[in-house]
Figure 1: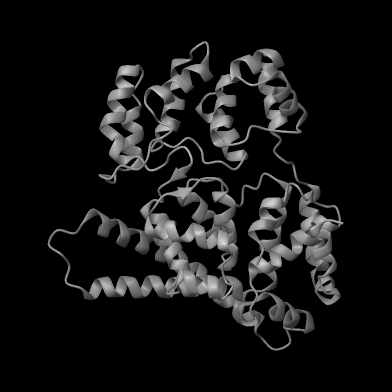
Figure 2: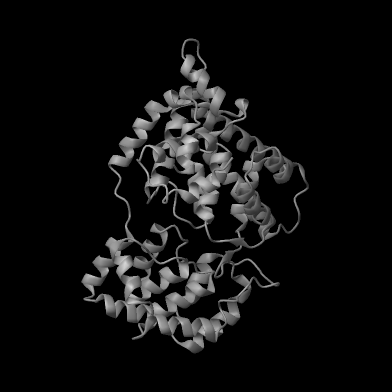
Length: 412
């Protein structure tokens, strides 16, 4: 018996009964689920390009057996760099490679990542040996060991993208790297969080200390170890970043839209664009939970709007500087825009929460749900999603191997 089965066995019967209707709705979502399969994408592209398995293996510089496993669906390239190389070997264009990267949970090609620009440069050059050409570029310019510049300065992504539009030779690529080295923020295994992502994460932490939240059990160690460098604006690991940010959203009881915003700021595939059965189940569970308990969204948005309001009021009380910094202007613009978007949603969420509290609406099931899965009962949305996934796995609706990363992150 697996650990997951044992955990499912320890879920009290009253909680199992409470979740039956929710499990049925999640199963219904899974029944219509069309899982993204790298093997299907691979076979389609091989057929379109008339590539044999042996030819693809040669172009990708992997064994014939590896390609066989990719085709059968028993394995897939591991890591963003391997996925990029597979895309290059298949002669995918930027859009096609981005689709594969995002579908497998990796960040898309990003203009502030010198390795991604080397990949885009390779696509433009269309060499006979694309993977070899790409690896040579990485080695020649030492891009695998690239790190944030100590002189790093902010430059808009659109400006960096525009500057790279005319790079077609190795000499111009070298000159471009030299000129824009101080603006890079993502590398082989790490990325620098942008200002908006940092500000957004801080809003959902409120005035809480990361260490205090960890000590009281509100944050698992994996999320604590993500938040420390993120809030400091230091390098954060790209491996598993998407799943960690989603779990952070669950821990703060975020609605789907706010988790999506978190991922959008990190330039990752949205939560609402689920590509695997476990994340589809997690997404469906979040929707179920917010439908059952209207105060989740209201309390979450109310806390964030209160923090934004206080910050903007504090800024307004200060004497405006003669020459406001770009950073200050960006911060104010971000807060103001977010406030304008969230306030109407907060009003609607408040109305739903008010209706929920009306006499006669909250029966025994609603009260048990609140006791088990709300802050008042020392529980939260993450515990609810974990229970849903655990039961689905134990009953065979989801493969445990597919959900291992989610279960590890949800060890609360």
